[in-house]
Amino acid sequence: MRAPLHPLLCAALALLALLPGVASAAPQTGGELFVRSVRTVRAETGTLTVTRSATATIEPARESRVSAATTGQVARIAAREGSRVAAGEVVVYLDDEALRLNRDNAALAVESARINLQSAERASASGDAQAQAALQAARAGLEAAREAYEAGAALFEAGGLARSELTQLRVQLEQAEASYLQAKGTAEASRLAPSEDLELLRLQLEQAQTQLRQAEAALRDAELRAPFSGEIAELLVEEGEFIGAGSPAFRVVGTEGRLARFDVPPADAPRLLEAGLIWLPYGGLDYAARPLRASQTQGGRLVTLVAEIYPSETPIPTGTVTQFSYELTLAEGTLLPSAALRASGGEAQVLVVEGGVVQARTVQVVGEAGAQVAVTGLAPGTEVVFPVPADLPPGTPVQVIEEGAP
Image (cartoon, rainbow, N blue to C red; front, top):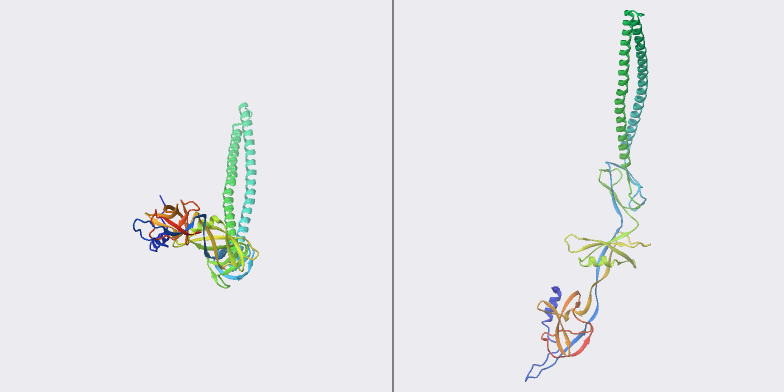
């Protein structure tokens, strides 16, 4: 399927149809055939290019709007517009008196929680040691009472001990067992109860440490720092003003690297990206730039391109607007004047001279720029009628009175 003709080309061909011939043949009379005189151009192979212009705005390669992370009053501005700053350098100080008080109170709370935990741990260790000592004494008393009762029972069987004395030994054994059970319960309670108390105190210490970290972070947020080395391009607050969390305070731009932003027709964008190079004039110098990316503009009629300007000892200042030209290759093929084509049956044709006779030759238009087209389907060196007379049908005998280049 052949590509449809460009609308401008069709209009040009229609106008050509209304033009008179370069040399009109005399009417045929008495069976005589008259030869028409025409001019021709020689078709040549070449590259069809076009030069266009665009306006570029120079931007910094890196830019950031720094916002406040906390609400407060601006206490001091350390760097004004136009000042150079290093990465991490403080640009705006917020009033931090209340924040410092919160930090100090949080630090005291941490210290208090740590002291309480240490005291409880020492008390727990001391109480547990006492309970264990009492348990060991009760265990020893129980073993001694059991041995005495067993020895007394043996004597009682042999008749060497009265029943009342054996009963007394039995009572002492039961008392020793009761003392042991009580000491064992006390030791277990001493081990478990302090453990629960200690866990609570440890939790309180962790909470206090968390509050301290939050207070320290809030204090750091009162210092608005430059995220990278650059220049303060804009200050959005003044000393004494209040700023809310999330509100911008200043804008910093990088001093290294420049970008050029410009709009081009949609068809030009991929060609420029593929070419990979444009030249931007400024101050009598030409700066090389490499197109990086394209994005559709609002409305979709143009495409915005962003190009990286190669480093230079004298970079173009940001905010500069410069106009530049760029050349694009539209097509490669046989080059002809646009007016050498005519429309026939929805196809593009040219009239060629072969053996002194005009012949119609169908061609395919692959590119158009101004008054020139690139076509395929036509051999280089072919003589093409140009200008095209309005009444020159194929098969007409002709003589070439002038031949030129397209």
